[in-house]
Image (cartoon, rainbow, N blue to C red; front, top):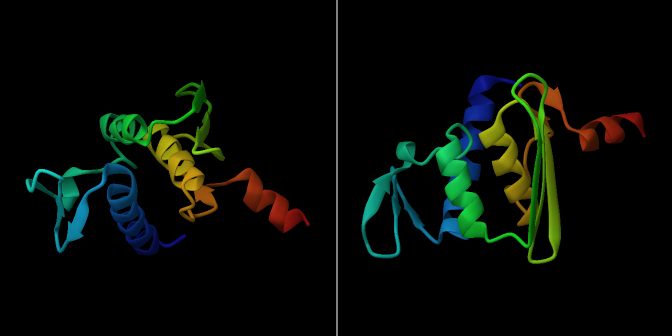
Length: 127
């Protein structure tokens, strides 16, 4: 996948997660928080920074959350939010957590995580 396409998808997904999970409004170049303070969009990076992915996870308040794996293989995340299960696999812990959250709240995510196709993408191709 072209890195520019991936970057654009990452920006859109981050904005949607900020709006739907964090409760922030989006404005050009910034997120407006509930208390009318703001943060530049480049400072909230849940796909790259574990601390931000964990903040997103905490705010999402899942009914269930499981993380398996290690840095040498891949991570597997399963999460349930409002009765909906989201799953993701990948080598990046923050990206994998964020993708699982996005899937659980109905945001479409790319079928490829860290250059690997997800199980769903492999099953679709194999069908």
